Length: 461
Image (tube, rainbow, N blue to C red; front, side, top):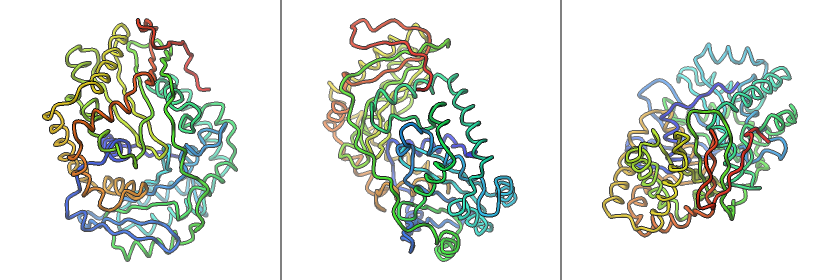
């Protein structure tokens, strides 16, 4: 039962650190308390002590995301995460949930393209119980048949319901257009057909392959000392498998050579627009330049170029956003908006014009400095909770960014030049490779005939 839901501020943190960038360093008083070590079984541990409140947040990232789903059984990693808190050891699903509820413990898992992520929240007085249940879920999962069948029913119902959501249908159509045959093209939650092919043994095998100590990173933030944490880890997680898992780093995605446009007919008052191309991974030398360029183009809310042109000047949308996800195999750069059907073609033309302007015209010194000041000055406002600290540091550890990442990040943002921004725009914002999806009532073809519009029913493959 994956009941965990991200709050809006957490999506902002993930967007800046996991998807787009990481910004200004945390206050020195927090950085001084960061401790790291590798447990005897190979588990990488990061501890951020904070004894202001009597609680703790735990995050675990492990290799085993949807990119590793077998072809034809897309959605396996997502279902494995869904069943993470469905009982363990002697406790069946109902008893397990009752135990968590009694002690006020929240524990669930979620899945992304690269990792599976575990979230655990507990009062510090109940951490022994929390880690005991975590150990059950990791080492002694139940995976009872009745719970598996319920998971299949709920996932199938969710997929059917998602067909009513134009944003889901747009994203579902755009991803394979951007990635072609690459594993990132596969739908994270699968399709009705692929979910039916998943067996209970697949769940067991994926869980066993994912949760192995050498490939896992745990970050703990809150009211706990290293001595106490090490005792819990030895007692409850010490028997995690010490052999590395089978999941290799995804291959680097290559941009699709020719852009296209797909229209999905749907009776909606507005047209949903999604556009995208393959971008970069975290190790790419252009990471910081793309961070600045994206913030300027469409990541800056009301002040971004796209927002100014599409929303403020033309009044075609309530909001328009761009962002990139630096996945291990090169994540996507995307643009998203919703507009009236009759203005969809105009909005797309304006977006393309702004992308071209970003490539063709050197940005001003003032615009560059404004974006750099915003990026380097805003991050402390988003690290004011234990959950945010655990989330951020877990991703730093998982993606091997180094303990000085938050310290060096501002200087690297300030070092980005006008020429860097234009160069990365020319590299990433290739209009000939730009993929576009519209969902809504039929829109007229682009006059210049450079894009291809095809009607689809939008149903999963």
